[in-house]
Length: 247
Image (cartoon, rainbow, N blue to C red; front, side, top):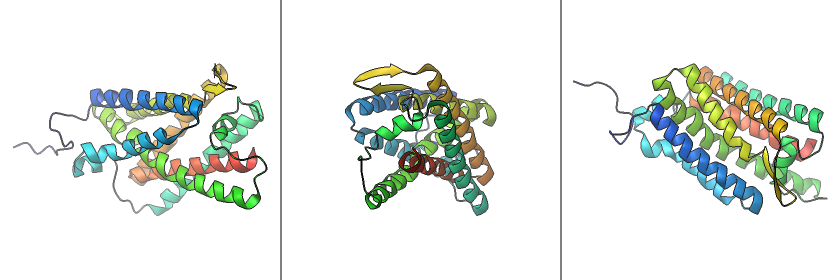
């Protein structure tokens, strides 16, 4: 009798490298195009849609055993969860310092370019700025961390790990995460034209790769995907704070 747990709802779908590659190509390429379009049109509603789809994808395709296998489980490692949040904030501050040291307030600074999408009004009052920051921070700490971590550190990582191992799978999901973020910074839309920034893009991709590895380590330390989600939430909180108050 076969005692192998059933991980997918469709018995014809296996969680292996082929499935992982298919998911990466479909989701990441679609997202890349949508983000570039959003940067040009300043309409970011589609980005929320693909984040939502990434978040619910495991629940649509996996069984309870499958969800558990990719790390969607409770954890009682509350100290590590708090550390994950703090480390995420710290990583965002390091990236802020690096950007300011190298590029100051120019558009080659990743946070400066990303901050353009927040449409912070010039001359906004302190109270209104705090309200806008709070809204952006809450949104940024929930939607993309859950959507991206369930996808990259969850289903994609597990699929590749079944054919390779955890370490090499983490390199793959981190590479996919980092390259996808070129659409957020690197290939930029500025002054009504598209510009590619070779060296800033390289630094940004390396940074996103390293941050992804940090997210994965927090998943391992907490034995739950929520460690990665909280670390990612901390990173987004720190980034949004830097954009609103430090640039």
